[in-house]
Image (cartoon, rainbow, N blue to C red; front, side, top):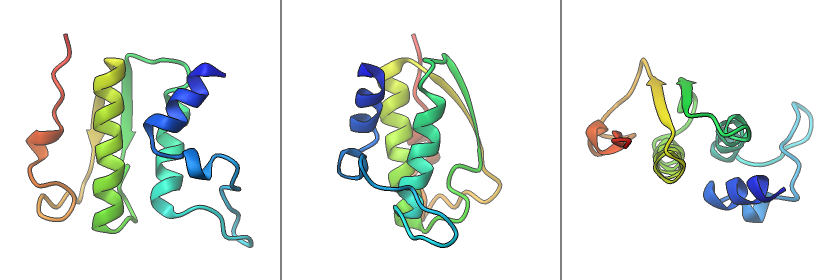
Length: 106
């Protein structure tokens, strides 16, 4: 439970912890929050390597930036190497500079 609580806090999902994620019929949390839940769930087992395929796909620039900021912080905090695959990564809207999201590991 401690790991789950830590990931909820790390991804800024504390206020949504008791919320339903959503279904096609019932609205739940936002798209950016769903994406953060998706990434956080992959970190439950404590991997040292994580592949993210289009983690910002379908999100607006603000939500994309938010997701990538959380991914960067959690990767750095947990010493996780992340391989990020993005076909449409606009440096002006998603990130100021993609190199800002490169986190060297020890």
